[in-house]
Length: 296
Image 1 (cartoon, helix red, strand yellow):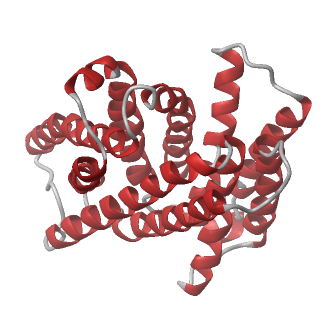
Image 2: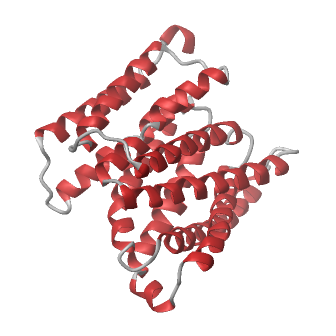
């Protein structure tokens, strides 16, 4: 089960990493709140037939869809995740305007430090291997993302707030995912994020049908894969997984984005970036090493 969950989270990081291309191209046609709002609504719509099929399969197998008394948790968890996703993605889009992509990627991934720190206050058990892995992953991210001088600006503060909210998002999923249907909670999350995004979209932006049609391909990719598939895999994969370890695995999206640019777009991979990838993969392996006596 642990290997299955880790595989889901790695696939999530892979989809997120490769989706950076779609998000970048999408910004050529659409404004931030329009892009985030529409792709979130697409993600929610994509999951509706999935939920229907799962219910049919469970009904034929004679299995209960949910444990009694979890409907309230399902709605609360989905809405909370949707609001946090909206806040984090909005802050990230605003912050990127004022800082470089490298610094944005590095600071966003600070959730690998924030999650275990918050976990201590929530009485989560964080072993020494996880802390060592956090330091290794942070060093790997520095080599991978940072190529300019380390200075702090307005955009960096926005991105740090984004990382803080993403950390809370991971912990909220950790709290609710063992109690509810992960696919349903993810669906509620997307509809919440999409509907809330409509307010600033119509207030501050000018959404146009021709722009939506022009950017249909990156919009569909981000909506179906980055939202519908990846975030649902995150919710399901995080079930019964230490949130500190989950955050480490999800941070691999930085590696996958660089490797995808190297393999697909022909971008050059420097020795520094290659070393960063190796450090991050080593950190994930270290964090996954089991404590045999305790597990037995």
